[in-house]
Length: 495
Image (cartoon, rainbow, N blue to C red):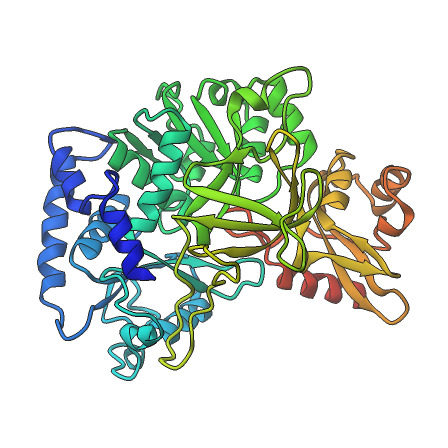
């Protein structure tokens, strides 16, 4: 299967060796604010360093570099040197790092982690990446492991290759008119959302700005004319920028990609009022970013515009299926199922006897299919709408409640700045709908929010328990850690 994939991708004009793109652009200052000559020198240094590692097996490199230039150079050098590269979050705390190191046992770490790394975690000869691949023939020589925590908080690595990432670039590039993709990146490069912005700009002849979101929020980078740039944001970031008078600046972008978490109705209404060219997206680490995207002209069209996730990109096929795997018709809700050239090869596991956890196709004549945790439907025009996550569905008194719907109504009150709706176990109801929220001010009470919500939701959907907190546990991409939210809710309610 993998050899067939590799053969197919070699024929694709988008797929070249990583360093060939850098060489083609060696005379350009495409990384705004950085020296391209210094990038070339760093790549050469890393290539020399990686070539000295053991050749008995592909070395495992853990990349935890905070400097964007060093990150890019080490990433390109590792892939070009046929090393297996694991991308790490420099801001993980010690227990998370221990979890990661126990999984991968890297041969080399690029970055500053000496204070938390124990020598026993390194160079463990009993755990090799290649052993795990005994279940498939001839795995790709260079594997790119991108971290994903999902909603559980447990860190896993989705296995990608240069080819799967380039398939995502190709689909995006074609969908948006085959023009150079200029990226204004405020998301971390170790995350798929930031990494793919780099990949698009490098390989399509685009320019790239790299700026931490905190710096952008403080006003930096606003002097750059954004009209030819794409910027990727999560909903909480968009809300913060609008509230800090950056709406006019955002409205001048070529496209503002919005993903990572569901956007609430009032935020989208604000974006329309300011004529911000939003492109809502649907995708995940496992698909190398978006496989469905809304074009800004659709979002801003007409009186109400379009609030869907958009239409399917050229490199993917997305269907809605029932529990038996049968494809559903338009406007029928089911499981969002994805086929894509950018689809990952599974999750990394250190056990040589453990099969990959990838969702391999159960349907005939399919290359590979991922059955997501998301529920949604297509309308008659082929626009995708998401409803919620299967794993988050609450069953209370025999009724199904999807948190996204309840959260949208609560946000619509204007009395909360953040909210998460969960189901907690209950002997009578099975589960109790519980709202954990951040009040928008000190004057907001639970009673005030409850009163505004009642009448806008069916009675069984209204939260029975309410918990006010100072903040919710979200990661850098705006995703909630639902397990932590449940712990917070249980602790508050028990007290």
